[in-house]
Every structure is written in C-alpha cells, then in structure tokens.
Image (spheres, rainbow, N blue to C red):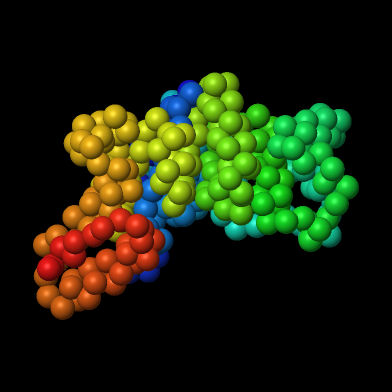
Length: 271
C-alpha cells in the first residue's frame, strides 16, 4: 500500500502555502515532516486527510484518487485537543470507533485494549477535564488508532508527553509500522523524528527542501547533527533574496530559528 501526493499546490488568497509538493508514503515506513511554523505542514496534512481540496495536484491511494472510504482508513492525531469535554473517555472512544465503521461491541473492546496498551485504563470513566495534558494526548492517540488504520498521521504527537510516555509513543509507532501501516509524523522534536523515521521531508516556504531517506541526507551532510542539517536547509532557502523585503524576511526567520534551536550555533547568511 502506498499513498502518493502529486504536485500539490494550494493558496489562501494571494499567499501560496504549497507549491508543487510531491511526496510518497509507503506501508511499513515512517516519514517525518519537518518545517518551521507556517511552512505549509498543516495544509498538506489537511489535504492528505481529505479535509481540504488542493488548487491543483492529486492524492492517490494505491492506484485511485483518495475517496471517503479511504479517509475512513486514516488515523489522525491533530495538534489541537479535540476531546468532547462532557463525554466520558470510553464513550467518546466508542463514538469515534463507530464513525470509522466499527460495531459498538468492537469499538468498546478496542477502546479498552488501547487504554490498557497506553497504560491509562483507569481513565475510562473520567471526563477530559479530569485528565492531565499528557493523558489527554494519549486518549486522542487511542482514538486515532482504534480502527487499525492503514495510514496514520500524527501532528505533534509528543506534545504534553513526559520522557517515559514519549518512549511509549515510540514503541507504539514501531508496532504500527511492523503491521504494515504508513505513518507520517509532523513534529518539531527533531531527535524523536531522527529515531523513529525511515524517511524525511523538509518543507519550507511552500516547497520541499529535501525528500528522501535519512541515510541519503547524512551522506550529503556527513558528521552533522540532524537539527543542524535542518537549519542549514532552511536558511539556504533564503539565499538570493533581493531588496529590503527579502532581508527583513530573512532576519525574521533567522530570529525564529535561533529561538527554536537555541543550542545550535548559527551563522547569519547575510553576515
């Protein structure tokens, strides 16, 4: 099973957020999606989920255009919290399972199994307001995986997780991959992406700056840490900007890089 995103282009008004982006997601493989805020990652994920139609380009599921039936085989963990505040954890997991085509009994069985796997069976009868941020994240992860999806899209999955639960998430992702699902992880946690992913896509300023295996990237940048490679690729994307607007834009983005990667020594490209 493979999913092909082919030449995706999308704009909001005059602002182009995706510019001829192509990406392939293979079953049994984990792809990391990296990019600064505003790079176009969320728009790409919404198109992949069938939530947004591109201005041009296509999403192919195996050999056909993405359909509503295909979308039911996607498991999506959004960056934003999406739990119903007045519904018990087990009730809403069953609700999401029914929406994905499970029977009530099967949804209940799988909900309890995933709560057990994620080490939170005691929260089944609680409301989201009674849970910590990290536990809410784990409940949403259970909702995304309940129906055994063929494509799993995780947007900032490490948000709110302590180190032990981050390791648990890594174990779960490895299990999903071993079952043959395609996994896409969008995250600012570069260390986790490097550990989990087979392939990497770096999106910046609406276009892919890199799309390939981690081994290929390391060959291009030998003996260089991934966070430094990422910064290099993003900063190099601004080379050649002309005029004050280009310089202002570069200065703004360079300040963003410094704040997001305070432990990386950066040289300003205009210095």
